Length: 121
Image (cartoon, rainbow, N blue to C red; front, top):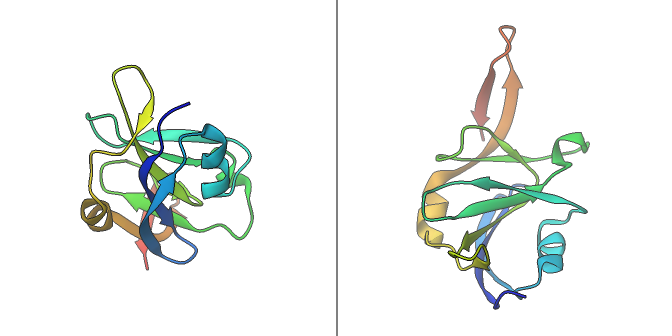
């Protein structure tokens, strides 16, 4: 089990980005982002990633967010953690302030040509 650390929680339902304590257990990620299975979206070369609900796009009444360093909108809550050389989750290298600057809340809008526009709120 990884060591407890500070992580960054993104909540598009309440439009908040806050620091939380992650207890080091991967089961705790499920609780923090309200999901049954998760995936990761890598956001930088330092190993930071956003853990998101792997089934988030299938849920009704969904909210979305976008990180400037990831090409697609993400569904549901997200948790930013870092990764060490051994693959263990650790405190992210980005700060809360940097995350707040790079994250926007909104929704994806499909366009006739197959592309998707991001509509910020």
